[in-house]
Length: 454
Image (cartoon, rainbow, N blue to C red):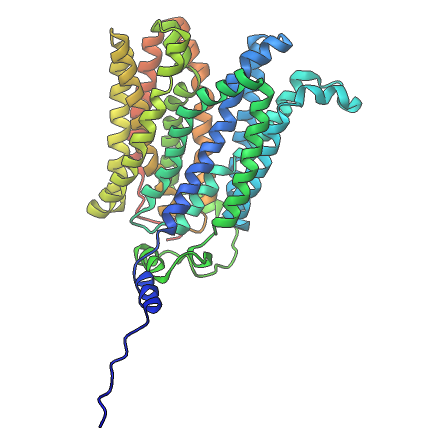
């Protein structure tokens, strides 16, 4: 009688089994792509502000005229936030985000030739150089409007309930990284090859990112061949049982705008994000001039220290996402998200208040930069709440919330300039601190634990 031999699996089979047992990390790679996309939006958004001096010199534009060109982007950006989010819920965030990247990248590249468009097209001759630039920048804003809502939709599909704020913080990380890197990078391009080259290069980079994004990222984890069952189980396990599972095809339904707009939680979220947008846009618009004119920094110092708020954002936004998810697990969804906002916005308000009145300029700059970072520490909880409240219509609600944030951002440079002119910069920043506190107070009425569908 021969002894039966125990057959061992072949080495290739053992390694394959180990790979299947160990979860892949595809969801984090997808979050990395969202960071890159958000960096691209700020690269294409901030390049005009840096090129503004060269454009003014070449075409002899007044400061007021350049203000109209700058505002054209914000108009398209604000008007198309809600439609861009609705389209993502309706047709898929991956398709919408890819189309949006291609759209704004093409018109970013066209910014370089916009002044010549009115010379070559007789039918558009009445528009003029200013009108051509305004139209092109408006259309860049139209494309970028779809970015944040659809990015948040992808987070809702790819990250479970215990990782939502962490996922949203990746897009906020992109703001910090791009805000710190864009000014020196674009300035170097313009000095080396001229201001037009920077728009062409940014447009070309955007098209490459769009192609790679569409190839790698899918709407849902189950659609991605790079993911193994072990990672998929992690995502499914951490999804709340009452929400639609990301792998189950949903019947396409119309966005329930009536239910969304009748929710007290939603209105508290919208008003809170309006008040969140007001102070952060001071850093996007006035901070460099504040450093030079009020704190007495040189132009080169202003360029270097003007990046400090974005470095603080890059550091504190991911921490805010991690804290929000930890607090939601520890104290429940409602209290956890509230604690994330309260800590972030109240710390931001205090730093803004004391920074505005600090006598030492370096102390002031450090405190103000940290204020921007804690503002985005709280923002991760805002975006996570959009997913908590409705996974199926995350992009629509995100677009609505972001519209309110941009309305606050639109008001911010206007009202800040008025208060600073009539009462001084210290009071202008102190008022922004008060608005920041109001944002925190709004979250007393936000209950992220009760979905809109319920």
